[in-house]
Length: 305
Image (cartoon, rainbow, N blue to C red):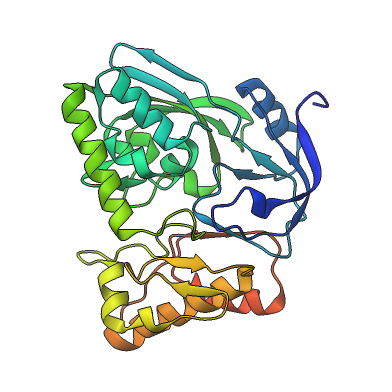
C-alpha cells in the first residue's frame, strides 16, 4: 500500500481538461491492476479518475481519497483481439490499432478520455462506439469485493450509458475484438475524424470538458442550443464555444460554480424555447458549496443515478 505512488494536498486542476479544481487531500497513482485492487480494497469510497476529460471538478476540492488510473497503460494485442488497461488513453489505443491493421477505434483518435471512462459512458462518434467491439470487461465488484468479467450484454450498453454508471463496478481492463482492414483506409478515417473535431470543437488552448449535454432522442443538443441562442452567453471567465453550442470553454481562472451557472442557463434556455430537458453529459465531482448544491439539484434532476 505504501509503495504505491501518491501525492498529498494536490491541486487537481492540473489533471483536468477543464483546468478547474481545488486541492485534494490525497491522490494515488497505481501503475498495475494489483496496485489498483489494493487501493480499492483498502480505501473508503474513493473517487476514481481516468483522464479527467469529461468532468467538472469542484473548486472546493474533495475530502475523499482519489485514485487516478492515468499510469495504468498496459496494451496487449493477440491477432484481432486487443486487451487494454483502464487508464490507456483513447488516441493511443486508436494509433495502436492502426499500426496493427485493426479497425474499430478510429473514432477515438480525437478523444482525450481513458478507456475506463470511455467504457463507463459508452463513448462514441462517427457511427462507431466503444460497445461495438468490446467483448468483455474485467471489473471490480464493490459489493462482493471480487474481480469478475462482464460480457458485452451484461454491460447494459445504451446511448452514453453502461452498467458501470450504477457505481457497483469499476473497470480494470477490457478486451475488444476488432476487424482487419487496410491501414490506409483506417488512416483516412482517423484523419477525417480529426479534421471534423478540429473544425467543430475547441482546441486544447481553450480548456473544456467535451460535450456538455447528451443528445435527446432523435435530435442534437448542439442544434437545440444553437437555435435557442446560447452562443450569446459569453461571460468574464466562461463562454459557450462559438463553433459549437454544446461546448463551454474556460477563458481563464474559471471556477466550478462559473461552469455550473452557465450550464443551468443553457439548460433553461432550451427548456423555455423547446420544452426539452437537456441532460448533462459532464459529471460533477468533489465537495460543493451551498449554491452549487442548489444548481446541481436543478441541473441533474433528470439524470439517472
